[in-house]
Length: 235
Ligand code: SAM
Image (cartoon, rainbow, N blue to C red):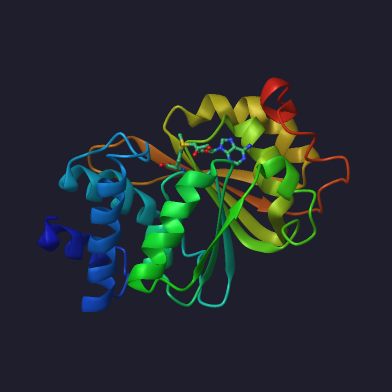
């Protein structure tokens, strides 16, 4: 792990860190790379690339200033814990709920977080379409984040129901998102979203951006539709 470069990146994002923070980042990365030999968690096997593409990419959301101490964030389709785990390490006073439909990935996250004292993460096994109809999750989060899970229209149906009125859904996307946004206009409106903003992630080598959508109205009861429908028939 190129510690110097990573520390510089944390500083440039105004994310405070101490030895314990750095130890957690290192432990989690080594744990994921180790588990990756047994179950598929990430295509990345090199530590420097891991830092760049999983850690820095996940943490770039800091510049939006939406994640705050005391708030609740849900990560839909977290896979090996991205962006949820790096965010939980960087924001120890924020609560993170990490959702995935594949249980074995969540078990790795639970084990690694437990072993290195990342106490502000809980995992939930299930499909976003089911959890979005459960009032333990529905309209219950200040922010919902999601990276590399579905097209924006489908993703809005997974994510916007989870967000409280006044909260935000932030999708990690590539610069090709402009086309997706056009196709998702109807979904955003129907599901209670307001204006859609694209914010460049200013990543040196990766053309990533954030799509930020404010929740302005509660989501109508009929959404999300049953599992599979949002991806087969996007709004
Ligand atoms: N977000 C992680 C990242 O950026 O590395 C993982 C991305 S991976 C390509 C997509 C993940 O979304 C998979 O782990 C998959 O199981 C999960 N997923 C896809 N559809 C889902 C759904 N409807 N509900 C919950 N999880 C879902």
